[in-house]
Every structure is written in C-alpha cells, then in structure tokens.
Amino acid sequence: MPIPNYRNTFVRCLSTLKNLTTASDEYARFRWQAVYLTRERYSYFFRGTVDGNQIAFFGQQVDLTDGTISSVPVRSVSLYGATFGLNETITAYNGPQKSVIDVAHAFHEASEMDYNPEFFYVKMNLLYSSDDSRMGFSNDPRLRENTNLIFVGLEDAATAGLLEESDIARWVASDTVMRSSDWYAERFYYS
Image 1 (cartoon, one colour):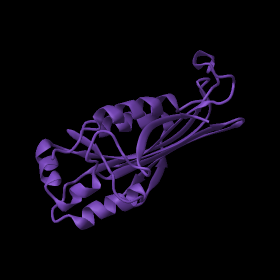
Image 2: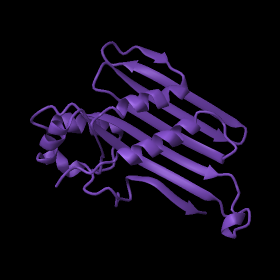
Image 3: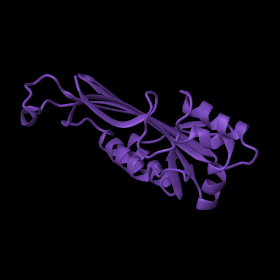
Image 4: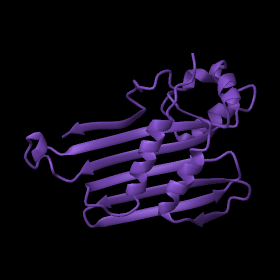
C-alpha cells in the first residue's frame, strides 16, 4: 500500500505555527513546540507560550557535529518548515509514543538501509479567544485545537517506495486520516 501523503496537513500546521510566533488576539492562550531533525548537520528546536501575562518564545540551532548551540529567531520556524517541505514525500509517524529523537534513532537502527529521513515534530495546544456566539454558545465553552504529530520527510519517491516495502512501514500512517490516541493533527473540540 502506498505511503499516505501528509503534505497538506503539514502545510496547515506550518501555517498555524507561523501565526503563533507572536502574541495574537485570535488565541486566549497557546503552547507549542516544533522540532526539525534534518538529514544534514543542523537540527532546530522551537517553543512558544502565551498564557495571560506569561509570554515566551524560544528558538535554537544545534550543530550535530560539534554540539554547538546557538539562538535563532522563533519566526524562522516557518523558514525551516518550508525547507522540510522540500521533501518529495511527507508522511506521518504512527508508531509507539516516543520523542521525535527516539523515533529518528529507531528509524536508523531498525532499517537495513539508510532511508535518510527528516523529522518535523509539531505539538500545539491552542485555546481560541471567545467568539462562540456564532455557534450559539456563550463565553464558555471555548474552542480548543490540539496537534501532536511527527512528520516524516523522504527525499524522493524511490526512497518512499523502498520504505513502504520495509519493516519500518509499520511505523508510518496507513491512511491520511490518523486514527490514533497518541498521534493526531488539528483536533478541535469545545471545553
């Protein structure tokens, strides 16, 4: 079975992340994290939080050859996300709950060949500002959105084809609609 395409989901998540790099009237509060593990020398880690008077944003680049850590602007998450988007195939991880670093190690250790994947982890917990009158609700409950997903990027279709025939294929999504309690994107609910 072909590997499902998660590019559209990735682009929507990246668009939301771009809007979360500063405080916004659209959200009463939010917390997010993005990790980009590249196939090259550098990896990137980003976080953002707005909760009342607490506002914090963070971005860093890690040189995987010498361990050097340097700050990068948090708004560059969209630039590095666009770089991840250059992968010809973007799918989603659907294996056991693990950190993105553990997933990357597992991919490398469990494969007989190096698929040279990239990983882009997105976790977002968003509480929208109260404008629920259009839905017939008062100020409470408020709309929430949650995402917790590791995107897997493969350079080309040939590599994706080899991956889908391997044992590692059990760790990627089998459908474009994620049916998992651990991994999900854009889950909306009122609470």
